[in-house]
Amino acid sequence: MSAADGRAGEGTDDGGADRGSDGPGGPGGDESAERGRGRDRIELFLTVILALAAVGTAWAGFQSAKWSGVQANSYAQASAARTESSRRSAEAGQLVTIDVITFTQWLTALNDEIVADPSKRPQGMYTPDPDSVSGFLFNRFRDEFQPAVAAWLMRRPLVDPKAPSTPFDMPEYRVAAEEQAERLVGEAERKSATARQANQRSDNYVLTAVLFALVLFFAAVAGRARAGRAQWVLLGLTVAALLAAVSLLLSYPVTV
Image (cartoon, rainbow, N blue to C red):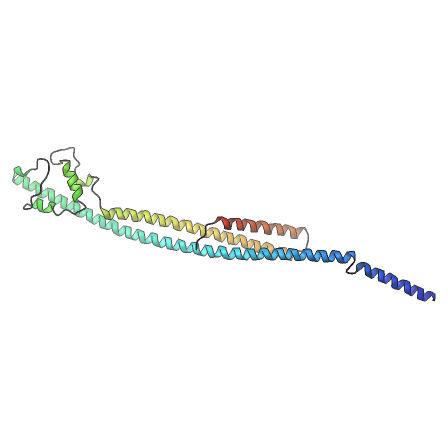
């Protein structure tokens, strides 16, 4: 074999050795494969985070809309209760006016009868005379007013100066329409409080949706970043934002 053939064979052997050191089975090929697998794991992790953030954003938006509906309904109910309360209050005022007028007319008629005939002056309890004007008016007191008048007369106000001056000072004097108006006012206040609470809860869900959007942003940037410290920092921010958003989401009340 000639010297040229020997040099050609040596070149061929050296080239084969060089190619073997950088091939798939060599150290360089293993390092590239490991980097590829690490990149795949990061992308899978980011994909899961993106999916969770998307679900969280959708749920937060849904709950925000539901609580906004609760707010609108509660405000509508509060407005209706206030309207009914105003109507009942006006009705109560009219009934009180009727009681005052009839009571005043009764006192006037009774006084005229006493002036005309002093013997008719009651000496304690009052017994209405159906044939007199005072008796006519007394028998036509409203049903709600009669218990207060009866309790007032039991105090003998016509002869006892320490008795209450009118039946309207007696605890027995109660107007149902006025009590209903007060009850409706309380109901309106409770509905308004519910509406304000629902509004706050809706705002909280909107804030949570913003946090999930921040998670999506960090995850997208981390997926584009090259492997290194920057990518790990972005991954840490992504996980921290996701945990904060999920924690808030789990702490909020749910409506359906």
